[in-house]
Length: 474
Image (cartoon, rainbow, N blue to C red; front, side, top):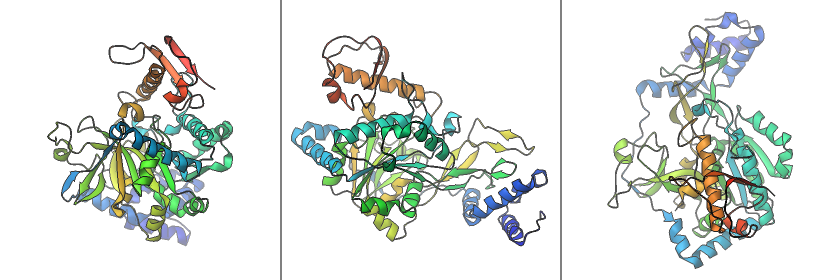
């Protein structure tokens, strides 16, 4: 056991040894006094009982999830709503009235890092603008400014950060004068962090004197929001619903009034948008009925035999894939908080930089670590009032998860060019495309210029032909 002088430090060290994590002191003699103090202070903040529990789960191989009898979840299709023009307009009007009356706040989950992309920095700073290079955060900020003007309201915007992303995101807002948003309407909420373990259940060291920690998942929003006082603050200002989305999907229709209207008129406590999975391997959690109650199953936990089941129509039986766009009622969150509800942890494999046995910092190219995350959609286990809306993938879902391929930044930029190209087509503009349907050229339309094709139609003349490059700003 390492030698320390202070009695408090001796107690801390003893706890580490009892938890069988003494390897974290391998380079103790190489550390400066301040580094030693910092490591011991970090250990005191780590829940070693949690570490031991996760270690037991890993060593027992108990990452399997048991299910009751599963059936496909009931899903309302957007196309069905649109086919009934009267219902569509009624839902839209209800949602717009909710916005005008200030009943809605926006939540953007931005605590994750782009580890799958090999960047290990905040996704919020990724440059999504196909022409301008605007960051994801700026793109969303412009949408919120435009929505606020359209409905003559002030939309509170809650941004969940993490220890890794907090400073970067706050600095971006300060540098850009909060993107013309009233400073008092933007709320930063930092989620918790938990240790990362290797496959033997040992703490991973990111430096010789620092334990690797990871954000505790998007479900960490529930803990942070209910524990920070922000829940009661929102309730006191008349907010009733949260429009929730993740920072890596630039196509999200923030505060979609039809979705808001559907949530309200169905008296839902939790509503979610879904797209049908392209194939069993697509990395989307799904919604299903378990013993008659809607629940979510993460893609890593869905058995392959269930993921690949096909219905009579030839489509995936369990294909209602979550795109992490939700509406959550504040009254529901308040009830869960008052009842002391705690969300469970799920294990996921990820790439995490670490110090090897020789003291060298290694940036892995393959998954090497076990992260422990909470999922926000687990709260639906506590309600029967759930509404699911199937929307169009080509209009609302282009996640940025990887450095290359279908979920890359480049693909998302092309997605936006194609989306804006379709808006132009709806305005009567000729837009050439290649054999795959991709726009021949690059298009970017600021939300401050037009939030949708209807607004665009009112601002540009019909006819003409697009060629090359087009950037529309206010």
